[in-house]
Length: 399
Image 1 (tube, rainbow, N blue to C red):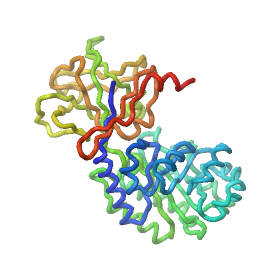
Image 2 (cartoon, rainbow, N blue to C red):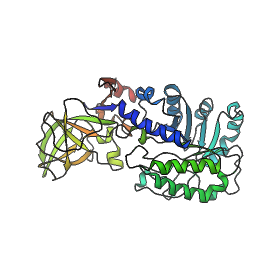
Image 3 (spheres, rainbow, N blue to C red):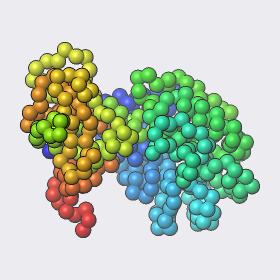
Image 4 (cartoon, helix red, strand yellow):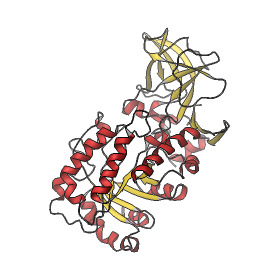
């Protein structure tokens, strides 16, 4: 079966970059568990992270048990029992709509941790300013259910609210954040200036650890916000913590020709193990693992000694083109068409690059396809298998 392989050294590299941004800007940088929640790596990340952001009770529990630090929670809606538990240990709870806030206001305001200031309450705002390219991941599309537009706040009773939160980006740079903040500032600047607003959460989707990200511009913006509005500023990236830190290794199970295409069936599934390949859609970089050296300079995020990585090309770019598919019954469960220098054979091992974020957190047991193991590459070069999945994980899932 396949194997997720994560580099602890690469995680720490990203963490140091994010911590440096925090130190130089004064902003607090949280780990978004919706993107990366591999708790075995948290001891390495803990010195660099201010805490975690959670999308609900279970992620918040995970943060409290395994990471510590500041726990910020946002959900489109809360159930009574969930909220009661979150009130006991979260530090920020943000509400998605005015009806949600009005429904739970008295419950929250009566809690001792709110009265003492240990827990603060906020609202998610929709600045209605889109910079993304994929509607599925854009919270500002027309008809979005995420966040409160400006007109709904006119005349609203916001007593008890001490924070504002917007999250609009997806895999984007500093300029997109700057443009979004200017749109937010134009609509909500007067509210942000009021004394009772104590924090501003700028959400996630920031590609801070990418080589071409303008971190100086980000830091300048964060300092400006803090100095002008006198608020605590939070960022909650997810992908930035885990990008370029892991791979998914897979083997070829079958090779055949049908209806004019050469197919290679792998032991992993896009639908079950890396759904962004279908949803985004996202085309991963793929390498054939060979025993012979490769003259091309491209290489994956995680390398093992003695292995050589031959990058695949687009369809027709190299001598042998294959449609890489999964061992499921879903007709569209394919990674795409890729070409290789040499023919693929049963047993060949391929490496799918950059598979730490939004993969393990989204995996399913669709079709009963076995889950890939999760292995950690330690800084000393040794490997530690941190999770192995079995039939029992599948059989227990639905009772």
